Structures are given as structure tokens and as C-alpha cells.
Image 1 (cartoon, one colour):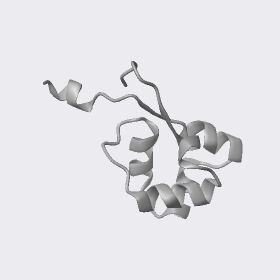
Image 2 (cartoon, one colour):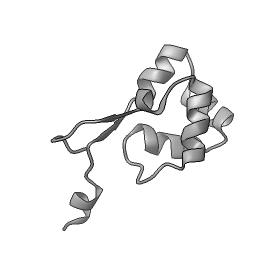
Image 3 (tube, helix red, strand yellow):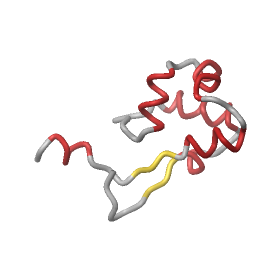
Length: 79
């Protein structure tokens, strides 16, 4: 299996939409969650290989959302 195939997944991240709906910047979210903008950007762009539950919890607290609002699963489509 090639590295590209190993990184393929069917998960989408809706962070852009949630931030826009709340009038919040990625930098503001990063400050409030306690992670770097770079790490949130990697998540936002669908390039994250993993997300800590503590980070996911804090993102949901700050954005007042559920994990399902942030993440989507689209079988048959790879990212």
C-alpha cells in the first residue's frame, strides 16, 4: 500500500463552516482551545492523522457543537 493510500480516508471536517457561523477566526479558536494554529489548520484541511479526545472536547465546548457537527463520514469517497 502506498503512503497516499494509507492516508486516504472518508472523513470530512466542517471547521470552516462552524467558524463562519460563529464569526470566529482560526487564531481565536486556537487560543481558546489551547492548541497551535498550525495544528488546527491541519485538522481543518483534513490532513490530521488523529485528534485527541481532549482537543475534540475543547473544540466542541468553544464552538458549542457536537462532534458530528465538526466531522462527517462519507463512505465511498476518499480524501
